[in-house]
Length: 219
Image (tube, rainbow, N blue to C red; front, side, top):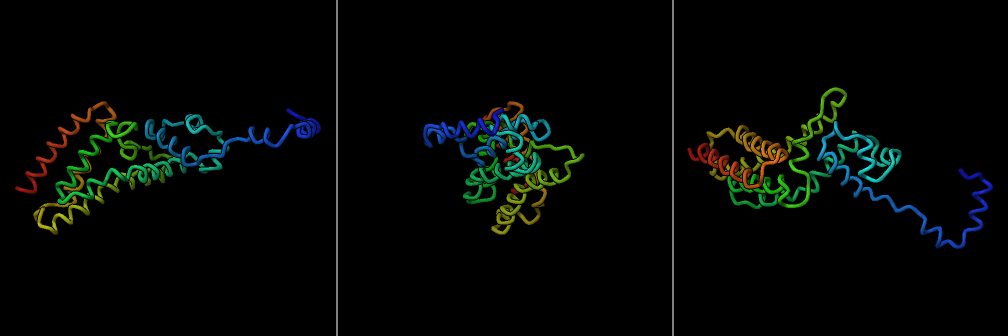
């Protein structure tokens, strides 16, 4: 470690400001670091991801992580929100579909591609679906992940209501149960994708699910 006198001597001996500029650390890219943390949590889950894993992946020291994000828990919540915002495009075909049935099938088919890495290089499965957190000591995180997992069902439920209003779905159909059925199929696809199911295998399962839809809706 330098003494104060040595530091002053070195500063006076520095050849030029340009030399010092080359030695400055790069500016911290918070979004890039958050994306790396998101990917790590996505791959390993909250519990299995250590602080050492995070600092290594993000390329920062523990003090910098705490300064930027507050805590591991806060970082996870932000990463979960970042996941939702980054991959919101996955709903595009669902939202553009002309009927409720087409919307549901589009979402499930797009999920089969995304969850198995067929769209881009991402970890297998859905981060929100696979983020199982033990309740002990993490009640707030449990609530956050439950909220994240429930959000897709609300989107599907709203689309089913539109379908019912348009006469596509009979009034006798329980829309809550149908929305939950669709979400259960998608959640199961996420788990099977993590376990190695292929896109084609998940797409075949979607076809079966849509036949179940037809049997219920068309009677």
